[in-house]
Each structure stands twice: as C-alpha cells, then as structure tokens.
Length: 311
Image (tube, rainbow, N blue to C red):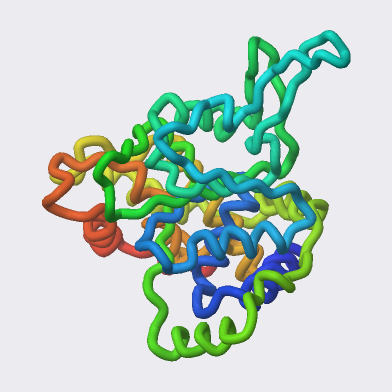
C-alpha cells in the first residue's frame, strides 16, 4: 500500500499549502476519491468549502468546473444541449459542466428538484443522457457538493435517494485560534491557490482505485461493521437505518482509509473514523429535531464490543 500512501501524502501536502488545519478532512476526501465516491460538504459560509474543492481540483491533472446552483438553473445548464449550427446545417452537442472530471456543485440545495435530479444519473451511472443519446463521463468523475445549514428559506432539501449517492457527508468546522492566525498570515499578500501546482496524475489515482481492495479486512471486523449497521436499524430513534449500499460503502471506505494511513489491513479505528461521514446521512430519524445522527451513532458504537485480535 506504499504507492497509495505516497499519493495521498503528496495530495495532502499540496492542499495544505492553501488549507490550514484540516488534515482529517483531506484524508477523508482522499478516501472517498479512491472509492470513486462523491462528497457533500455541509458547513457555515466562509469555512473554506469552496476553497478546499478548488485546491483539490488544482492538485490533479484533471478537468474542473464549478456550478453555482440557483433556483433558475435548468437541467440542460448541467448536462449540455443540442443546438442547430447554421454553418453546418446540422444539430451539434454543446457539452455542459457535468462533462468535467471534478465538478464543484456550490449550494446544491438552492436548485429545484428537477435540476438536482439531473445530477443523479451522472453520480450513479457516470453518464448523462441528452435527447435520448447517452454520453459516458471521463474517469475519474467526482462531484463535490456544498450546502449551508443556515439561510434555508426557499431552498430544496436533497431527497434521500440523492443523499445516498454521496459517499460521504463532511463538515469543515471553524479553525482554532492558531490556525486562524496562520490563515491571516498566509492570505495577507496573495491567495496561495493562485500558485498551486499539480501534485498527482490521474494515473496515480487510477492505480489507487484499482488496488485498495487488496487491503485485508478480517472476518471479525466484518462482524463488527455489521453490528454497527444493524444497530442503526434497531435504534429506537431511527425510522430507517443504513442500507446494504451503506454497509458496502463503509467496508470499502475502511480499506481505502487504511491504505491512506499506510497499512495493508483494516483496524476498528478505521471503521470508527468513517461511521459518521459514511453512515450519518444515510439514516432517517423518527424525529429530526430530537437528536442528531452523530449522537445516535456514538451511542451505537459505544455499546458494541470492539474486537481485540491482532489484524
């Protein structure tokens, strides 16, 4: 797993030239990318969501596009459309921003459900369909979507089916005092994003995507993982627990996360680190205002005996 660790290390080092004090978030996004998963960043305005996405895109030798979601955005604004070219006397396809490899969907919950649904095929099938013709998307294809938990008036919450298409839901959070001072110094004279260079190639990411599944996942840890998943289905405050797709996401995510940490085997701590990011948004609570999914997942994990064998 040395090659995957070195790739993740180069990516993190490059992003750290712009983003201060968010090493855990960078590791989780790298894990998601290795698993070909999409990421939903939900946090307060000004915490660096868009900046992180741009730094990630510039660190790759890949096509990048940013879409500002608004209520008047149409599905064709994402996928592209066929237009009549008078010079050739024929219809011609003009590709939309979804045809890029890394797509930043800014404030995704401000668009209408019809426009949001146009993302679903791209995220799930890595293809788009325009006027009955299907276009395959380039590999890798990653959607980084952002949404703010405030100013929700007039927004359109993402449906459960689309939330489930996101591999992880993450939060940046406020930086601490020292990190904030470092940010002030770093951005005092210029934006370091302007000078950020490419750090890794698409082929390096492809190697990681093709080889992370060789990380050893012991049978006893599979039981431990399933105890957590079944705990979400039987908890008294949960209406709908984690599906088999969510269990598979946690399984694959733990393998990729272990590789990012330079190990060829999964430990219980790898699973614990991914419980909230991967399972939290896949649960439907009976009363959304009584508890947060993070506190419910914490209860479930604390009640399950952690395996102690050598992995």
